Length: 379
Image 1 (cartoon, rainbow, N blue to C red):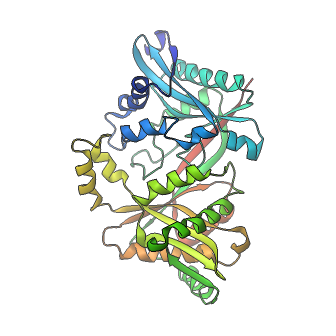
Image 2 (spheres, helix red, strand yellow):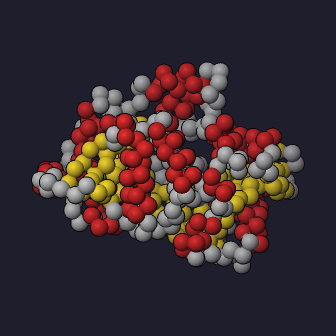
């Protein structure tokens, strides 16, 4: 039995490229035969875990760990102290993320113990995750729909991970939902009537992002982003550098016809963003851009048939105007005109965000996936 072999835990140096590659490539052992797994780009992961290339490390810190049985890697985890989170919430939460492990409780427990010890040593009170550094990145453990590949920037994991996490005493603190809509479905007439009525207000303008005025558009978007999600559970603000990094990444892949800004009386009021499911192309690359990965991605991108809406938000002072309904209807209508798109996913939505969940249900969207964030006191 694997559990009979002693488990050793080794820290991984963020600046050590060789050690980082071992950490980054470990998931290939877990998912090598899984047809639904989408390998991350190795170069992108190297940049993410390099402090000089990731603005997260300008305000916070992290420690990576790997588990070995003999010389064989059998698991990995990160422990991170997010100072942005501490400043906003002051709850003593420390985080784990990037958890991958063979189906062995002894290995999983050793990884969680290492992360907990590191966080406890920094004066933190709880272990929470999986969170990939912050709520602005990939978060949550997939609990169902294991027979489907994840959409862009959503997590994926084997079914047995829940047992490993709960076996260490971690318990649910928040669930996240994904909703799905298909191009054959129609928006309920009642919702469409509300959208039409809302648009009769001459002060409201809903338009696509103007690329020729991109710098000023980003300032409007930044204002919306800073306010629309500030009251959500676990939300943390982005620094200027983090915002610029995310915008730079999204600018390469977002659908220009499906990036909307709502303005009310000339002021930015809300926005929504759609990403083509680039995971369909990333899967063909196998984690490498060169020598053929990039060509495969470019070829497959033309055939992408799904989209994901990761961002739909309205500033608090405009939330009773029905702008969310307008953004949803406009997105769905434009997406249907794209001859390739067959399915859209709206994700993720906090379980505690009752208003957003209610809007999506009235829209006719079906809840398709559930993700979970766990927590455990550090004692």
